[in-house]
Image (cartoon, rainbow, N blue to C red; front, side, top):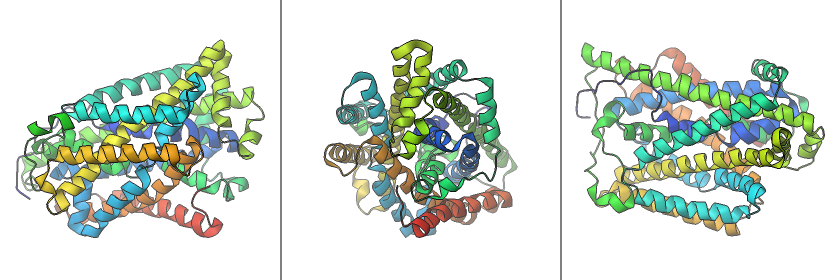
Amino acid sequence: MPIRKLPEAPPSIHLLGPTVFLVALGVGMGESYMWPRLVLVFGPEIRWLFLIGVTLQAVVMLEMARYAMATGESIFTGAARVFKPIMWFFFIAAILVYIWPGHLSAGAGAFEEITGIPWTVTACVVLILIGIVFSLLKVIYNVLQNVLAILIGVLVIGTSIIASLVGSWADLWATIEGMFHFGYFPSEAMSAAWFPIIVGSIAFAGPSGMQQMWYTLQLRESGAGMGAYVPQVRGLAHAAGEEKMPARGFMFDTSDPEEMSKWRGWRRWVTWDALLLFWGITMLVTISFTVLAQAAARENPNVRELIESGDRDAALSAMSDSFAVLGGSFMGGLFFGFIALIGLNATLGLFDSFSKGQADMTYFHVPGARRFKLSHLYAGFLWGVITFGILILLFGPVDGPTNVLDILAFLSTFAMGAYCIVLLLVNNRMLPKPIRPKLWTNLVIGFGAVFYLGMLLYSLFRFGVVVS
Protein backbone atom coordinates (compact mmCIF):
# COMPACT_ATOMS: atom_id res chain seq x y z
CA MET A 1 0.00 0.00 0.00
CA PRO A 2 1.21 3.55 -0.67
CA ILE A 3 2.38 5.40 2.45
CA ARG A 4 0.40 8.53 3.35
CA LYS A 5 0.16 10.77 6.38
CA LEU A 6 -2.56 9.76 8.82
CA PRO A 7 -5.04 12.64 9.23
CA GLU A 8 -5.43 14.22 12.65
CA ALA A 9 -8.07 12.54 14.77
CA PRO A 10 -11.15 14.56 15.81
CA PRO A 11 -11.99 15.01 19.52
CA SER A 12 -12.73 11.72 21.23
CA ILE A 13 -15.99 12.99 22.76
CA HIS A 14 -18.57 13.59 20.05
CA LEU A 15 -22.27 13.09 19.35
CA LEU A 16 -22.50 12.09 15.71
CA GLY A 17 -20.38 9.74 13.66
CA PRO A 18 -20.52 6.61 11.49
CA THR A 19 -21.69 4.61 14.52
CA VAL A 20 -25.15 6.08 13.91
CA PHE A 21 -25.50 3.49 11.14
CA LEU A 22 -24.71 0.64 13.53
CA VAL A 23 -27.12 2.08 16.10
CA ALA A 24 -29.83 2.36 13.46
CA LEU A 25 -29.23 -1.26 12.53
CA GLY A 26 -28.59 -2.46 16.07
CA VAL A 27 -31.55 -0.76 17.78
CA GLY A 28 -33.99 -2.74 15.71
CA MET A 29 -36.37 -5.64 15.88
CA GLY A 30 -34.16 -7.62 18.24
CA GLU A 31 -34.40 -4.98 20.98
CA SER A 32 -38.02 -3.97 20.38
CA TYR A 33 -39.67 -7.27 19.46
CA MET A 34 -37.57 -10.43 19.70
CA TRP A 35 -36.11 -9.85 23.17
CA PRO A 36 -39.35 -8.52 24.72
CA ARG A 37 -41.03 -11.67 23.35
CA LEU A 38 -38.43 -13.81 25.14
CA VAL A 39 -38.90 -11.79 28.34
CA LEU A 40 -42.67 -12.39 28.21
CA VAL A 41 -42.07 -16.14 27.91
CA PHE A 42 -38.98 -16.73 30.06
CA GLY A 43 -38.80 -13.65 32.29
CA PRO A 44 -36.22 -10.80 32.44
CA GLU A 45 -33.55 -13.23 33.66
CA ILE A 46 -33.05 -14.35 30.04
CA ARG A 47 -31.49 -10.94 29.33
CA TRP A 48 -28.02 -12.07 30.43
CA LEU A 49 -27.70 -13.53 26.95
CA PHE A 50 -28.44 -10.10 25.48
CA LEU A 51 -25.69 -8.55 27.62
CA ILE A 52 -23.16 -11.07 26.29
CA GLY A 53 -24.32 -10.53 22.73
CA VAL A 54 -24.20 -6.72 22.69
CA THR A 55 -20.88 -6.56 24.60
CA LEU A 56 -19.30 -8.98 22.17
CA GLN A 57 -20.57 -6.84 19.32
CA ALA A 58 -18.96 -3.73 20.82
CA VAL A 59 -15.56 -5.47 20.77
CA VAL A 60 -16.20 -6.66 17.20
CA MET A 61 -17.00 -3.07 16.21
CA LEU A 62 -13.63 -1.88 17.53
CA GLU A 63 -11.81 -4.60 15.60
CA MET A 64 -13.70 -3.90 12.39
CA ALA A 65 -12.66 -0.28 12.75
CA ARG A 66 -8.99 -1.21 13.22
CA TYR A 67 -8.40 -2.40 9.66
CA ALA A 68 -10.70 0.16 8.00
CA MET A 69 -9.12 3.18 9.71
CA ALA A 70 -5.57 1.92 9.19
CA THR A 71 -5.98 1.32 5.44
CA GLY A 72 -9.10 3.03 4.11
CA GLU A 73 -10.17 -0.37 2.76
CA SER A 74 -13.28 -2.33 3.68
CA ILE A 75 -12.98 -5.56 5.64
CA PHE A 76 -14.07 -7.32 2.44
CA THR A 77 -10.89 -6.24 0.68
CA GLY A 78 -8.93 -7.25 3.77
CA ALA A 79 -10.50 -10.70 3.52
CA ALA A 80 -9.61 -10.86 -0.19
CA ARG A 81 -5.98 -10.10 0.68
CA VAL A 82 -5.94 -13.15 2.95
CA PHE A 83 -7.79 -15.49 0.57
CA LYS A 84 -10.09 -14.18 -2.13
CA PRO A 85 -12.74 -16.97 -1.83
CA ILE A 86 -13.41 -15.73 1.71
CA MET A 87 -14.58 -12.42 0.28
CA TRP A 88 -16.79 -14.17 -2.28
CA PHE A 89 -18.36 -16.17 0.53
CA PHE A 90 -19.56 -12.93 2.10
CA PHE A 91 -20.66 -11.58 -1.27
CA ILE A 92 -22.96 -14.59 -1.66
CA ALA A 93 -23.98 -14.63 2.02
CA ALA A 94 -25.10 -10.99 1.82
CA ILE A 95 -27.38 -11.81 -1.08
CA LEU A 96 -28.82 -14.90 0.63
CA VAL A 97 -29.46 -13.11 3.94
CA TYR A 98 -30.29 -9.49 3.12
CA ILE A 99 -32.57 -9.83 0.13
CA TRP A 100 -35.27 -10.68 2.69
CA PRO A 101 -37.05 -7.44 3.72
CA GLY A 102 -37.46 -8.54 7.34
CA HIS A 103 -37.12 -5.28 9.25
CA LEU A 104 -39.29 -3.36 6.82
CA SER A 105 -41.93 -6.11 6.92
CA ALA A 106 -42.15 -5.93 10.72
CA GLY A 107 -42.35 -2.13 10.62
CA ALA A 108 -45.03 -2.26 7.93
CA GLY A 109 -46.94 -4.80 10.00
CA ALA A 110 -46.96 -2.34 12.90
CA PHE A 111 -48.10 0.43 10.55
CA GLU A 112 -51.01 -1.77 9.49
CA GLU A 113 -52.14 -1.95 13.12
CA ILE A 114 -52.40 1.85 13.15
CA THR A 115 -53.88 2.56 9.74
CA GLY A 116 -55.38 -0.68 8.48
CA ILE A 117 -53.32 -0.41 5.29
CA PRO A 118 -52.09 -3.91 4.34
CA TRP A 119 -48.46 -4.37 5.38
CA THR A 120 -47.43 -5.60 1.95
CA VAL A 121 -48.68 -2.39 0.33
CA THR A 122 -46.82 -0.16 2.79
CA ALA A 123 -43.63 -2.18 2.47
CA CYS A 124 -43.66 -2.05 -1.34
CA VAL A 125 -44.31 1.71 -1.41
CA VAL A 126 -41.49 2.37 1.07
CA LEU A 127 -39.08 0.23 -0.95
CA ILE A 128 -39.76 2.25 -4.09
CA LEU A 129 -39.44 5.57 -2.22
CA ILE A 130 -36.09 4.50 -0.75
CA GLY A 131 -34.78 3.70 -4.22
CA ILE A 132 -35.90 7.07 -5.62
CA VAL A 133 -34.53 9.13 -2.73
CA PHE A 134 -31.16 7.34 -2.60
CA SER A 135 -30.82 7.76 -6.36
CA LEU A 136 -31.40 11.52 -6.17
CA LEU A 137 -29.05 12.32 -3.28
CA LYS A 138 -25.72 13.90 -4.15
CA VAL A 139 -23.73 12.29 -1.31
CA ILE A 140 -25.76 9.54 0.32
CA TYR A 141 -23.72 9.20 3.53
CA ASN A 142 -24.07 12.80 4.73
CA VAL A 143 -27.85 12.99 4.38
CA LEU A 144 -28.52 9.49 5.69
CA GLN A 145 -26.35 10.05 8.76
CA ASN A 146 -28.38 13.13 9.75
CA VAL A 147 -31.75 11.49 9.06
CA LEU A 148 -30.87 8.39 11.08
CA ALA A 149 -29.59 10.52 13.97
CA ILE A 150 -32.94 12.35 14.18
CA LEU A 151 -34.99 9.15 13.96
CA ILE A 152 -32.86 7.41 16.60
CA GLY A 153 -33.16 10.43 18.90
CA VAL A 154 -36.96 10.31 18.65
CA LEU A 155 -36.94 6.57 19.32
CA VAL A 156 -34.60 6.67 22.33
CA ILE A 157 -36.26 9.63 24.04
CA GLY A 158 -39.80 8.49 23.22
CA THR A 159 -39.43 4.91 24.45
CA SER A 160 -37.62 6.03 27.61
CA ILE A 161 -40.43 8.43 28.51
CA ILE A 162 -43.17 5.87 27.85
CA ALA A 163 -41.33 3.15 29.79
CA SER A 164 -40.93 5.48 32.78
CA LEU A 165 -44.69 6.18 32.77
CA VAL A 166 -45.92 2.63 32.17
CA GLY A 167 -43.37 0.65 34.15
CA SER A 168 -42.34 0.66 37.79
CA TRP A 169 -39.11 0.78 39.74
CA ALA A 170 -39.54 -2.94 40.36
CA ASP A 171 -39.69 -3.54 36.59
CA LEU A 172 -36.50 -1.54 36.11
CA TRP A 173 -34.70 -3.38 38.87
CA ALA A 174 -35.81 -6.77 37.51
CA THR A 175 -34.58 -5.73 34.06
CA ILE A 176 -31.14 -4.70 35.33
CA GLU A 177 -30.83 -7.70 37.64
CA GLY A 178 -31.79 -10.03 34.78
CA MET A 179 -28.74 -8.86 32.79
CA PHE A 180 -26.49 -10.48 35.38
CA HIS A 181 -28.44 -13.71 35.91
CA PHE A 182 -25.69 -15.66 34.18
CA GLY A 183 -26.46 -19.28 33.46
CA TYR A 184 -30.24 -18.98 33.61
CA PHE A 185 -31.65 -21.15 30.84
CA PRO A 186 -35.03 -22.80 31.53
CA SER A 187 -35.70 -26.26 30.15
CA GLU A 188 -38.42 -24.91 27.83
CA ALA A 189 -35.76 -22.86 26.02
CA MET A 190 -34.02 -26.08 24.96
CA SER A 191 -36.85 -27.04 22.60
CA ALA A 192 -37.01 -27.11 18.82
CA ALA A 193 -39.63 -24.35 19.01
CA TRP A 194 -37.55 -21.88 21.03
CA PHE A 195 -33.84 -22.64 20.82
CA PRO A 196 -33.47 -21.46 17.18
CA ILE A 197 -35.34 -18.26 18.06
CA ILE A 198 -33.03 -17.66 21.03
CA VAL A 199 -30.01 -18.17 18.76
CA GLY A 200 -31.41 -15.64 16.31
CA SER A 201 -32.23 -13.21 19.11
CA ILE A 202 -28.65 -13.32 20.40
CA ALA A 203 -27.51 -12.52 16.87
CA PHE A 204 -29.99 -9.62 16.89
CA ALA A 205 -28.51 -8.19 20.12
CA GLY A 206 -27.17 -5.16 18.34
CA PRO A 207 -26.34 -5.17 14.62
CA SER A 208 -26.63 -8.64 13.19
CA GLY A 209 -25.19 -10.60 10.31
CA MET A 210 -22.87 -8.57 8.08
CA GLN A 211 -23.86 -5.18 9.45
CA GLN A 212 -20.59 -4.90 11.36
CA MET A 213 -18.66 -5.57 8.15
CA TRP A 214 -20.58 -2.83 6.36
CA TYR A 215 -19.62 -0.49 9.20
CA THR A 216 -16.10 -0.44 7.73
CA LEU A 217 -17.59 1.16 4.60
CA GLN A 218 -19.42 3.79 6.64
CA LEU A 219 -16.15 4.57 8.43
CA ARG A 220 -14.51 5.09 5.06
CA GLU A 221 -17.40 7.29 3.92
CA SER A 222 -16.98 9.45 7.04
CA GLY A 223 -13.27 9.99 6.31
CA ALA A 224 -12.11 8.14 9.43
CA GLY A 225 -8.36 7.48 9.44
CA MET A 226 -7.00 6.63 6.00
CA GLY A 227 -10.56 6.68 4.69
CA ALA A 228 -9.98 10.41 4.21
CA TYR A 229 -8.18 9.54 0.94
CA VAL A 230 -11.17 7.63 -0.53
CA PRO A 231 -14.06 9.48 -2.29
CA GLN A 232 -17.65 9.15 -1.08
CA VAL A 233 -20.34 7.25 -2.98
CA ARG A 234 -22.88 9.46 -4.77
CA GLY A 235 -26.48 8.94 -5.78
CA LEU A 236 -27.17 7.78 -9.34
CA ALA A 237 -28.28 11.26 -10.46
CA HIS A 238 -24.87 12.69 -9.43
CA ALA A 239 -22.62 9.77 -10.38
CA ALA A 240 -20.90 11.80 -13.10
CA GLY A 241 -19.26 13.97 -10.43
CA GLU A 242 -17.72 11.06 -8.55
CA GLU A 243 -13.96 11.33 -8.04
CA LYS A 244 -11.72 8.52 -9.24
CA MET A 245 -11.48 5.69 -6.73
CA PRO A 246 -7.95 4.56 -5.77
CA ALA A 247 -7.02 1.03 -6.80
CA ARG A 248 -6.06 0.10 -3.24
CA GLY A 249 -5.94 1.47 0.28
CA PHE A 250 -3.13 3.31 2.05
CA MET A 251 -0.93 2.83 5.09
CA PHE A 252 0.79 5.21 7.48
CA ASP A 253 4.32 4.89 8.81
CA THR A 254 3.93 2.87 12.00
CA SER A 255 7.58 3.54 12.95
CA ASP A 256 6.91 7.29 13.20
CA PRO A 257 5.99 8.29 16.80
CA GLU A 258 3.92 11.22 15.54
CA GLU A 259 1.87 8.97 13.29
CA MET A 260 1.36 6.46 16.09
CA SER A 261 0.17 9.28 18.35
CA LYS A 262 -2.47 10.20 15.76
CA TRP A 263 -3.41 6.52 15.47
CA ARG A 264 -4.06 6.33 19.22
CA GLY A 265 -6.25 9.41 18.84
CA TRP A 266 -8.34 7.64 16.22
CA ARG A 267 -8.63 4.57 18.45
CA ARG A 268 -9.89 6.75 21.33
CA TRP A 269 -12.40 8.32 18.96
CA VAL A 270 -13.85 4.97 17.83
CA THR A 271 -13.74 3.54 21.38
CA TRP A 272 -16.02 6.38 22.51
CA ASP A 273 -18.38 5.39 19.70
CA ALA A 274 -18.31 1.73 20.68
CA LEU A 275 -18.80 2.10 24.42
CA LEU A 276 -21.11 5.08 24.75
CA LEU A 277 -22.94 5.67 21.48
CA PHE A 278 -23.29 2.03 20.40
CA TRP A 279 -23.32 -0.05 23.60
CA GLY A 280 -24.97 2.64 25.73
CA ILE A 281 -27.81 3.60 23.38
CA THR A 282 -28.54 -0.01 22.42
CA MET A 283 -28.69 -0.98 26.09
CA LEU A 284 -30.90 1.99 26.99
CA VAL A 285 -33.47 1.15 24.33
CA THR A 286 -33.63 -2.53 25.20
CA ILE A 287 -34.04 -1.69 28.90
CA SER A 288 -37.01 0.51 27.98
CA PHE A 289 -38.62 -2.23 25.92
CA THR A 290 -38.00 -4.86 28.61
CA VAL A 291 -39.74 -2.64 31.16
CA LEU A 292 -42.61 -2.29 28.69
CA ALA A 293 -42.75 -6.07 28.25
CA GLN A 294 -43.15 -6.58 32.00
CA ALA A 295 -45.90 -3.97 32.11
CA ALA A 296 -47.54 -5.78 29.19
CA ALA A 297 -47.48 -9.06 31.15
CA ARG A 298 -49.45 -7.39 33.95
CA GLU A 299 -52.06 -5.99 31.55
CA ASN A 300 -52.33 -9.27 29.62
CA PRO A 301 -51.70 -12.20 32.00
CA ASN A 302 -52.42 -14.71 29.24
CA VAL A 303 -49.87 -13.29 26.77
CA ARG A 304 -47.31 -16.00 27.53
CA GLU A 305 -49.81 -18.74 26.68
CA LEU A 306 -50.72 -16.97 23.45
CA ILE A 307 -47.08 -16.72 22.35
CA GLU A 308 -46.36 -20.33 23.28
CA SER A 309 -49.43 -21.46 21.33
CA GLY A 310 -47.98 -19.93 18.17
CA ASP A 311 -49.45 -16.39 18.15
CA ARG A 312 -46.29 -14.58 17.02
CA ASP A 313 -47.89 -11.13 17.18
CA ALA A 314 -49.21 -11.47 20.74
CA ALA A 315 -46.12 -9.77 22.21
CA LEU A 316 -46.60 -6.64 20.13
CA SER A 317 -50.32 -6.48 20.91
CA ALA A 318 -49.68 -6.86 24.64
CA MET A 319 -47.06 -4.11 24.66
CA SER A 320 -49.45 -1.88 22.75
CA ASP A 321 -52.05 -2.48 25.48
CA SER A 322 -49.54 -1.38 28.11
CA PHE A 323 -49.16 1.91 26.20
CA ALA A 324 -52.96 2.24 26.00
CA VAL A 325 -53.16 2.33 29.81
CA LEU A 326 -51.73 5.85 29.61
CA GLY A 327 -54.08 7.29 27.03
CA GLY A 328 -56.41 4.85 25.35
CA SER A 329 -56.21 3.83 21.71
CA PHE A 330 -54.00 6.77 20.74
CA MET A 331 -51.19 5.66 23.04
CA GLY A 332 -51.70 2.05 21.96
CA GLY A 333 -51.21 3.15 18.37
CA LEU A 334 -48.11 5.13 19.38
CA PHE A 335 -46.37 1.90 20.32
CA PHE A 336 -46.90 0.53 16.83
CA GLY A 337 -45.62 3.88 15.56
CA PHE A 338 -42.33 3.22 17.37
CA ILE A 339 -42.11 -0.25 15.82
CA ALA A 340 -42.77 1.19 12.37
CA LEU A 341 -40.04 3.80 13.02
CA ILE A 342 -37.57 1.07 14.00
CA GLY A 343 -38.39 -0.83 10.83
CA LEU A 344 -37.77 2.30 8.74
CA ASN A 345 -34.47 3.03 10.55
CA ALA A 346 -33.15 -0.45 9.97
CA THR A 347 -34.30 -0.57 6.36
CA LEU A 348 -32.62 2.72 5.45
CA GLY A 349 -29.36 1.55 6.98
CA LEU A 350 -29.56 -1.98 5.59
CA PHE A 351 -30.32 -1.09 2.00
CA ASP A 352 -27.60 1.55 1.87
CA SER A 353 -25.03 -0.71 3.54
CA PHE A 354 -25.88 -3.79 1.47
CA SER A 355 -25.57 -1.83 -1.77
CA LYS A 356 -22.27 -0.25 -0.69
CA GLY A 357 -20.83 -3.62 0.35
CA GLN A 358 -21.77 -5.45 -2.84
CA ALA A 359 -20.64 -2.52 -5.01
CA ASP A 360 -17.30 -2.35 -3.15
CA MET A 361 -16.55 -6.03 -3.69
CA THR A 362 -17.63 -5.86 -7.33
CA TYR A 363 -15.68 -2.69 -8.15
CA PHE A 364 -12.37 -3.79 -6.66
CA HIS A 365 -12.44 -7.53 -7.38
CA VAL A 366 -14.53 -8.26 -10.50
CA PRO A 367 -12.47 -7.96 -13.71
CA GLY A 368 -13.77 -5.17 -15.89
CA ALA A 369 -16.03 -3.68 -13.21
CA ARG A 370 -13.99 -0.48 -13.02
CA ARG A 371 -15.39 0.54 -16.38
CA PHE A 372 -18.34 1.64 -14.25
CA LYS A 373 -18.34 4.17 -11.45
CA LEU A 374 -18.82 2.88 -7.93
CA SER A 375 -22.03 4.92 -7.76
CA HIS A 376 -23.42 3.07 -10.79
CA LEU A 377 -22.75 -0.29 -9.16
CA TYR A 378 -24.28 0.95 -5.92
CA ALA A 379 -27.47 1.93 -7.76
CA GLY A 380 -27.60 -1.43 -9.53
CA PHE A 381 -27.48 -3.42 -6.30
CA LEU A 382 -29.88 -1.01 -4.58
CA TRP A 383 -32.58 -1.39 -7.21
CA GLY A 384 -31.87 -5.10 -7.46
CA VAL A 385 -32.58 -5.75 -3.79
CA ILE A 386 -35.62 -3.46 -3.93
CA THR A 387 -37.04 -5.37 -6.88
CA PHE A 388 -36.45 -8.74 -5.20
CA GLY A 389 -37.96 -7.45 -1.95
CA ILE A 390 -41.15 -6.43 -3.71
CA LEU A 391 -41.40 -9.82 -5.43
CA ILE A 392 -40.92 -11.64 -2.11
CA LEU A 393 -43.51 -9.49 -0.39
CA LEU A 394 -46.07 -10.08 -3.12
CA PHE A 395 -45.36 -13.66 -4.16
CA GLY A 396 -42.85 -15.08 -1.66
CA PRO A 397 -43.09 -18.21 0.49
CA VAL A 398 -43.16 -16.48 3.89
CA ASP A 399 -46.30 -16.02 5.97
CA GLY A 400 -46.30 -12.54 7.49
CA PRO A 401 -43.61 -10.15 8.69
CA THR A 402 -42.56 -11.98 11.86
CA ASN A 403 -41.74 -15.10 9.86
CA VAL A 404 -39.48 -13.05 7.59
CA LEU A 405 -37.78 -11.63 10.67
CA ASP A 406 -37.11 -15.03 12.29
CA ILE A 407 -35.54 -16.30 9.05
CA LEU A 408 -33.32 -13.22 8.80
CA ALA A 409 -32.24 -13.50 12.45
CA PHE A 410 -31.13 -17.10 12.26
CA LEU A 411 -29.33 -16.79 8.94
CA SER A 412 -27.43 -13.82 10.37
CA THR A 413 -25.86 -16.00 13.06
CA PHE A 414 -23.79 -17.93 10.54
CA ALA A 415 -22.40 -14.76 8.97
CA MET A 416 -21.44 -13.42 12.40
CA GLY A 417 -19.46 -16.48 13.36
CA ALA A 418 -17.69 -16.37 10.01
CA TYR A 419 -16.75 -12.69 10.24
CA CYS A 420 -15.16 -13.25 13.66
CA ILE A 421 -12.78 -15.72 12.00
CA VAL A 422 -12.10 -13.22 9.21
CA LEU A 423 -11.30 -10.49 11.74
CA LEU A 424 -8.67 -12.68 13.39
CA LEU A 425 -7.04 -13.44 10.04
CA VAL A 426 -7.12 -9.91 8.60
CA ASN A 427 -6.02 -7.91 11.64
CA ASN A 428 -3.28 -10.34 12.67
CA ARG A 429 -1.86 -11.02 9.20
CA MET A 430 -2.48 -7.90 7.12
CA LEU A 431 -1.63 -5.11 9.57
CA PRO A 432 1.86 -4.05 10.75
CA LYS A 433 2.73 -5.45 14.17
CA PRO A 434 2.55 -2.12 16.07
CA ILE A 435 -1.16 -1.75 15.31
CA ARG A 436 -2.30 -5.36 15.55
CA PRO A 437 -4.86 -6.34 18.23
CA LYS A 438 -3.80 -7.42 21.70
CA LEU A 439 -4.10 -10.99 22.98
CA TRP A 440 -7.25 -10.34 25.03
CA THR A 441 -8.99 -8.86 22.00
CA ASN A 442 -8.14 -11.92 19.90
CA LEU A 443 -9.49 -14.17 22.66
CA VAL A 444 -12.82 -12.27 22.74
CA ILE A 445 -13.18 -12.43 18.95
CA GLY A 446 -12.27 -16.12 18.99
CA PHE A 447 -14.94 -16.69 21.63
CA GLY A 448 -17.40 -14.92 19.33
CA ALA A 449 -16.67 -17.34 16.50
CA VAL A 450 -17.21 -20.37 18.76
CA PHE A 451 -20.26 -18.77 20.37
CA TYR A 452 -22.18 -17.98 17.17
CA LEU A 453 -21.20 -21.00 15.10
CA GLY A 454 -21.48 -23.36 18.05
CA MET A 455 -25.06 -22.31 18.82
CA LEU A 456 -26.05 -22.59 15.17
CA LEU A 457 -24.53 -26.04 14.69
CA TYR A 458 -25.97 -27.30 17.97
CA SER A 459 -29.43 -26.18 16.87
CA LEU A 460 -28.98 -27.90 13.53
CA PHE A 461 -27.74 -31.24 14.84
CA ARG A 462 -29.72 -31.34 18.09
CA PHE A 463 -33.10 -30.33 16.73
CA GLY A 464 -32.68 -30.77 12.99
CA VAL A 465 -33.86 -27.23 12.33
CA VAL A 466 -32.27 -23.88 11.61
CA VAL A 467 -35.45 -21.81 11.61
CA SER A 468 -38.48 -22.30 13.80
